[in-house]
Image (cartoon, rainbow, N blue to C red):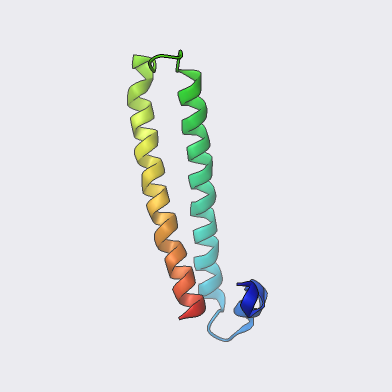
Length: 89
């Protein structure tokens, strides 16, 4: 992005109007949600880990959080590719 003048320069072009901004903010929202969910997953896992095994009552929640993190990571990657394509192709 720096080579083309940053995001401000890209957005100023005609094809980067309101739809691009909405798409970009959606991508940013998904990526921030991914980071937050990863943090929650890690924090709760460490809280319920006694050094040898995870508490059995936490395993189901940990599995759900892990799959949620995986889904959000996939969405972040796909929307990131969309931002790249929109800006540079």
